[in-house]
Structure formats: C-alpha cells, structure tokens
Image (tube, rainbow, N blue to C red; front, side, top):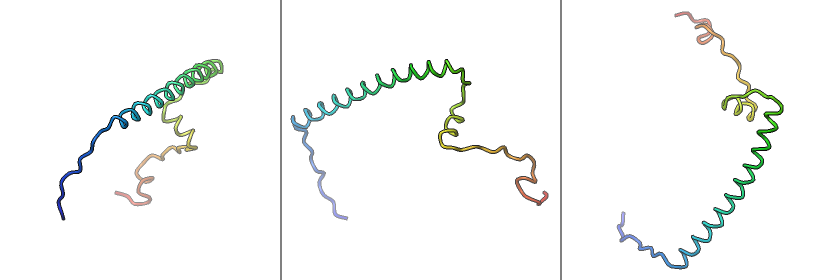
Length: 86
C-alpha cells in the first residue's frame, strides 16, 4: 500500500460564516417545532385527562403503535420441548 502525506484542510472565513448561518437556521426551526409540540402536547394532555384513559407502559404503547399483540406463553417444559421428556 502506498503511503502519502496527510491532506491539509484549511478553514476559511466563508466556511465559518456558512456554518454559523446554517446552525442559526436549524436552531430557529428546532425552536419553532418545540413550541408547536409544547402547545399540541398541552392540548393533548388535557384531552387525555378529560377522557380518563388509564396510563400504559412504554412497551404497551409501542406494541399498540406497531400492531403487535403478544400472546401469553404456555407454561411447563412440554410447551418448550414438545413431547420430549428430560
């Protein structure tokens, strides 16, 4: 394998200005999104509280969202190993 000297990268003033402008734009978008979520979250929490729904665990919420309905496991060795006895 051929070895070469490392490439030198230079940071220019234009690059710094572009980075700052992009960062400020992303921060403003994030603030707007957070404010919108906070407003919607407050309304949603009030609606949930008014309906009196019960609290569910994180696992249950995920299972509902993806449509997974876990079936209870049958107990005992026979359920795991079929008809074999140990």
